Amino acid sequence: MPRDATYEIPASYDLFIGNEWVTPTSSAVLENRSPLTDDLLCTVPDANEVDVAAAVHAAKGAWRGWFALGARKRANLLLQVADRLEADADRFAWLETTDTGKPWRESKANVHTAADRLRYFAGVVRGFDGRTQPVGRNILSMDLREPLGVVGIMGAWNFPLNMFAGKIAPALAVGNAVVYKAPEPTPITTFELARLMGELLPPGVINVVTGRGETAGAALVAHPDVRKISLTGSSDTGRIVMSSAAKSLKRVTLELGGKNAQIVYGDADLAAAAQGVMLGAFMNQGQVCTSGSRIFAHRSIADELRDRVVGLIPKLRVGDPFDPETNMGSMVYREHMDSVLRYIDQGRAEGGQVVVGGGRLDLDAFPKGLFVQPTLFGAVEDDMTVAREEIFGPVATFHLFDDEDEVIGRANALDYGLAAGIWSQDLGRAHRTAQAIEAGRVWVNCYNLFPSGSAFGGTKASGFGREDAFESMLDFTQVKNVIMDYAPSRRSFYD
Ligand code: NAD
Image (cartoon, rainbow, N blue to C red; front, side, top):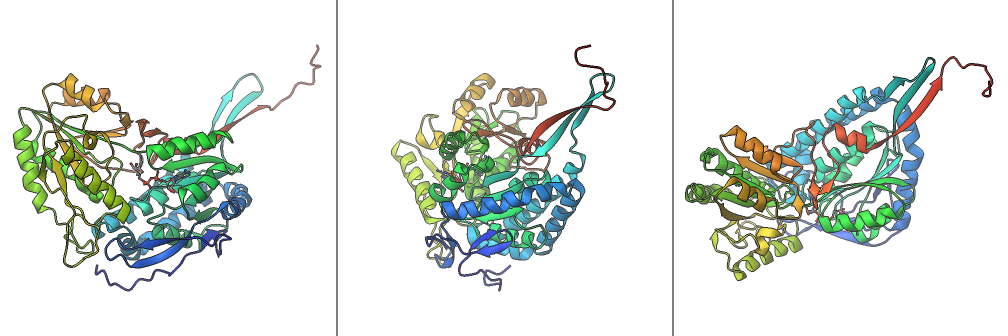
């Protein structure tokens, strides 16, 4: 797929409210620049309280009718969205790569994941029943699952399209209407999928606003008619959003940051483990919440594992994300790349040894491209900044360990608890470790797989709530209990 393919991006977007493009009252805009060329791709509104209120108003007017359609009709419409999205996969992937700089083949896979999330929830909602319990001779107690009404959803910028689809799918399937605040640096595919959905769904069911966290995001969290906020973002933002949501007693689910351990035991299949380490550290340029950036290697195999990884890193093709052979593209935006490079400098300043990489990558074809070399720090101390803080870039640290209890303690030592990888051919050990690890997702002898239907989410500072699975439908519903006497006695209450 050539970079100069002829798909269009509007010079500016308005807000998507009630299936229409609505000019915001706010005149402030955010510039969206190409991570490859620094050219202006488009501008999007920095929506204010009034604009967000208009989107909430549209959703408030829509959700009852949407719920009343029933699960079958809602599901059929979501299936149509998935079909249309996949039919337009090349364009969506092109837009995603243009906006994020991620490899084209990953963008293409992301389109299919987005469609799969929509299909999964369209399917599961057909069996998402309440519960009926006979509680006496004539009496039935019914737990009815009802939508919350208007829900506010905010996603991060690293997987804009499949995060949008994956987060809204359960909310819509069970009958809510959504106001989605798109991530600032990568809004394009969110707007384009909303445009497509607007051709199929009733007005107001899906609404998209853009803007900064402090403006549009804060307004969405504060709005009294929004019943729940579902956020994917950093742990710091999670703390702000949760405390602000408390003022109006909103529900929250938080998918937050991570600093995830990959534990490679002495009996691991090292060829497979080395590949898994590479995927964990460098997929999506390391801009993944589950990035397996802390590599714990058992001392008996540490040299061999490190040699294998060091040998694989130069084989990564970093560069033009539209080249089908490319494994790593650019970082998403300049300030973020600068932050990643600062972390690398800090790692060196604290005594860390860079084994491979360690800086920006200059490419003749992209003199302004935001490329960072895949970087590995050799045996580091656990308390170094690069080993403790989420870098969200292609930077991994290598740690040695001697036994199982020790490595579990060290893996659990951080406040984060999102994901972990375990590499061992001893399934007893792998399972013991998986149980002891404080994380919402543990991969054994694999990494970074995200199948629909597998509950995904964090513990500790990585948040709470589960996505991609049945549990998320519970999070987007509430139970109304109805107790019915279907043959009421006419006896007096006092007899
Ligand atoms: P971020 O926290 O800066 O922003 C996330 C969203 O929250 C954005 O839409 C932003 O505008 C909004 N926001 C920011 N401040 C706000 C405020 N005060 N009030 C209301 N809304 C506000 O995160 P980011 O930089 O976009 O994404 C990177 C982070 O997301 C990393 O920490 C990464 O680990 C995390 N992440 C987590 C998951 C997961 O599933 N657990 C997935 C992807 C990314």
